[in-house]
Length: 230
Image 1: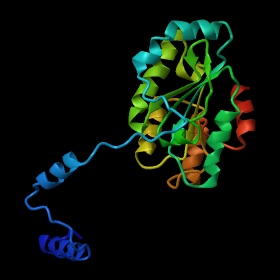
Image 2 (image 1 turned 135 degrees about the vertical axis):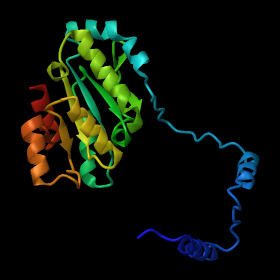
Image 3 (image 1 turned 90 degrees about the vertical axis):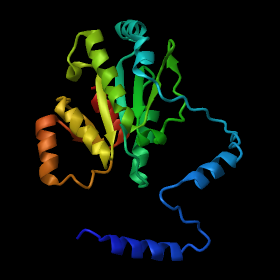
């Protein structure tokens, strides 16, 4: 059923009545809100011990392409991980904290979206100037992650599925599911997903993803790392 204008007006009136003293914006004139916002003082800096570096662009990362190729050739970088996706309030989501914490020191983590908040305050250090934890931003920056992965493919002259690279994706919901479909459309195989299987995945869908794309539900973080590094 499509609400009528009369119905919307009545519901709005009820809402206003429940918020006494709240000014009603007329004719979409938000000038009072804008002026009030301008009159407010600046937010004070909140002191904190941890400083996060985020928003790495593709050009910044790829400026290190020569160094990355050298370090891979020398065996100092053994594997790349793309670890990202959605976060979840459920305790199982601590999987990603344990996963990243237990990665060997000769690995690099590219991360993005809310799942990164499980580990992006970790001090993973660097490998001869290449940060071990590269935070690309939020899920709308997923295209940067793909740009970097494609650049790695070109850099080493290998197909994406042949790179020393593993996608480990957390609980995918809402628009993040579209990002997963995009990865599947690019024919990226052998990704890991979990620890909570999304609500839209029934047994039939999971079977198709496993059989056609090698998608693997995650398990124990340490055991998964062993499988991924094989």
